[in-house]
Length: 270
Image (tube, rainbow, N blue to C red):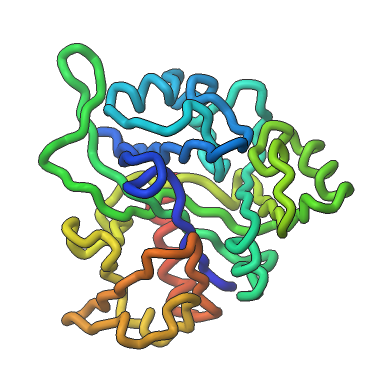
């Protein structure tokens, strides 16, 4: 099994904001806005626990270039999309998809989704705001075991995706020409995490792209991180200076990494 770290949601580069961690530990990954002529779903048509994402991001002061978004991955049953059936899935295309194919990502592999998050609090007026006592960090917010891979440039695979109810999925709405892929899972093999400090990747909020991970990551072949200078031992942990480009980092087969990932799912998966 390969473990793939997959960067998702708004941040300083996409959407100019931070996703919220609610007081009950729920994490809501705010999807990035669409680009240019891309088709997407209006934030007001997506709800978390009955409240639209448009309202939530407005309360938090999150500004986006568009009010339509690229809502992906689908892993959280608490997030409802108007007019969309539920099927756990994650889409990718172009260079990002080519990278996954080149790294041999296949059925049985595990995606761990991470993004930029910060605690929020509810004020006396009943509106959300960021907790000034908590800075933004990279956090793991969900997972997906790959059960099926659909190549959406193939009509038969596109029909399979629509039969699963994914007519409104951004990778169905947009006919991406290069390696338009959809990774499919099921509700027992995917889902969100409940926030816990063990899910924080950043070693220091001042440099959230430097992660603190167990030492055995130094023995794992990780895509985009072949340079050993990106890893530095720090007592019982390893400091991993992650690259700023690339949506996914693929960890090749490693028993320790696999055990670590499965342990997090067992402890913090919802």
